[in-house]
Image (cartoon, rainbow, N blue to C red; front, side, top):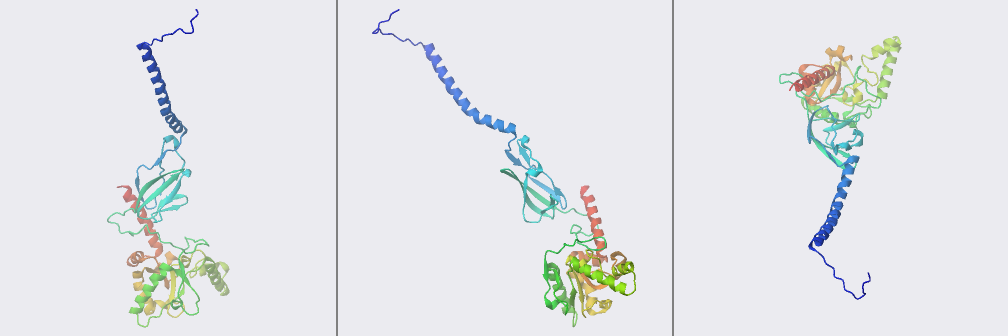
Length: 354
C-alpha cells in the first residue's frame, strides 16, 4: 500500500506499554548494580578458595609457661585453608631475657612477662607470655633456687676448647701477687672478690692476700697438666701412674674450674700451701667466704666426691644464696648440683599434680 509523503501517522501508547517499558529499564539498571556489587565479592570468594592469607590471630591471646618449657604454638590463620608451616614465620622476641632461642626453639628462660610476635607475609600476630618457676612443696628442704643452673667443670663435665667467659676482665695489678703477670676473671666474680677482700682487711690485722691464679684457657690448662705429668715421670713413675697422680692436683684440659672464669687461687706468700688453712686469712676465708658468694671448692672431707685433693686456697664464686646453702648444709659443688637436679624433679612432680 502506498502512503503519501505528507500523510501524518499517529503513535498511540497505551498504559500497558508504558509499564512494560519502565519495567525493562529498571531491570537493566538493577542488573548493572548487581553485577557491579558482585564483582568484588566474587574476587574475595575466589581468594578464599585459593587460600589467600587474610589474618593471623593467637588463641588464646596470653599463655603461661614454666621455666625450661618450649613455646610451640602457631597463630591461627584466616581463612583456615591458608594455614602455614612453622618455617614460614619470622619470630620477634623482646630483649628482656624472659624468652630465648635454643637449638631453633623458643624456650622460657626466666620468670617475667613478655610479648612474642610472629610474622608471615604482610601480617603479624602477638601473644603475651608469662614465665614462672615451678614451685617446690612447702615442706621441702631442697635448694629453692634449683632453677639457677650453676656451671660446673670436673671429671664428668668437660668444657670445649673454645668455651670462654663473655665478661672476662684483667685483674688490676694491686690485687695480683708479684711476678704473676696479668690475670683475668669474670667481672661479676671480681666485684664480689673486692667486697670479700675489704671485709677481710677490716677484720684481719695485717691482712695479706693476693691472687695467684684465676681464669685459665683450655690451652693453658693442657700445658699445666702435661707439666704435672712430666714431673711425676721424672720422679720415676710410669706414664700411666704419672697421669693418675697428676689428676690429684691438676685437672685435664676442659675439666678445670678455672676455665669458667669464676675460680680464684689466693695466697699470702705467693705460693699454694696447705698451711694456708692455719693462717688468719685462710681461717677467715673458710668461715666467711659464703657471705660474699664464694665457697671453698675442694674441701678436705669431700675429696672422694670432687676427686681433687684439699685446696684451702681455691675459692669459687657461685652467688650468696647458693654459697650460704652449701656452707650451712656442708655440701660441695658436686653434691649441690645433684640436689638441684633432685629439686627440679620434685618441683615438676609437685606442680604437675596441681
